Length: 259
Image 1 (cartoon, rainbow, N blue to C red):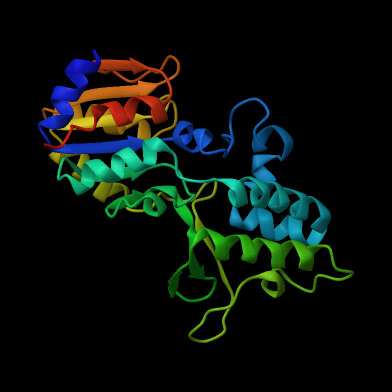
Image 2: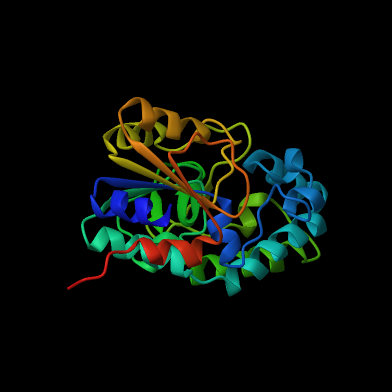
């Protein structure tokens, strides 16, 4: 199976679709699995921007705890060998792009250039009242969390805007550009179009249970792509090749030797 996967990847035209399992190997626990954030923090309250804003006014200590957990895992996370392998495959002209459900920016940190973040990203800020966007790195995002947590734990929180970072252009409040529950995905039409161009769709670290991202393997297959799925356990994805194990161990094996 690994040999067949190597042959498919070596032929180029690869698009990667990555999920929470890739970030989990980097030290960022999945939100949905047992023990994840949604086990401890109700997603209807903490899983959307509106919910966070309401909780910040009513239960600032709870929001501070939620952000503190995010800060803890993001501060220590680093790109894995899986992230670096995908970046290397792009450098070699074999991967045309990465579609990711993750919001941590680790693909870009590893060197991937074309990354479609359909669930948004913690490494991009967007204006609350204007469309201005600003790229930040993970270190800066941790600083944003530190300031928000300190504000939430102060004696008085006058408004949600008071604890948000400010736009470098006009000083208006900005928020991390993640996709919360009930919000539209970012650039999903572009992701579908990229999947349709794939000769090979390399699906890594996702069980295929969360729609509409879970539809992308079928979109690629319908357009003639082969589907290679990499992960530690069972997945509902219809794959031509399945490789069981950690992405950080398997993906480096798919990188052709130069010579």
